[in-house]
View (cartoon, rainbow, N blue to C red):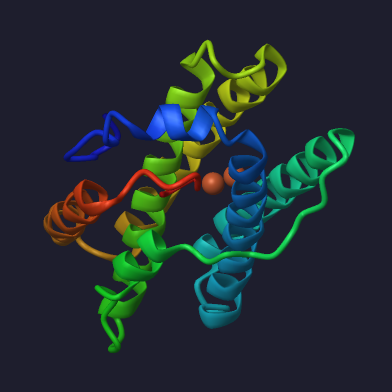
Length: 192
Ligand SMILES: [Fe+2]
Ligand SMILES: [Fe+2]
């Protein structure tokens, strides 16, 4: 599914379902960081019009997801809380080249894999009977959106780089992503 080379560790969903306030908070912060990341891409590559136009749509959608999750937290008497960071995304980002034009390709493909992994985890959350139905419905609705973002990042990459170069690099970064996911210790976080 979605170019992912390994599935989430089997124990994660039980930890997540038992710690939904922590998952919701971490998820809200993930949406915030996805929006920030979109804005950073636009700021870094203002001369790339197709990128800017596509990423503006992602920025709007991630901001809407952030607002949705802050609202869901508030409805349950929960605040956003501190951002505890995302070691998975940090590790994955270490692969990003320091030099252009490879830096752009790597940034797009790392984003694409984070979207794909998020989509996979939303699928697990949406299917868990241990999670309240209203929340499952929200995660179900977010699955399609994140899958769309995954595809958009690949399409942007293929606008600016030869397709075989994109496919080869995506293959390499997917291998790294799978290794990181296998090493995770089932924390109550979106990518834990
Ligand atoms: Fe999102
Ligand atoms: Fe997204």
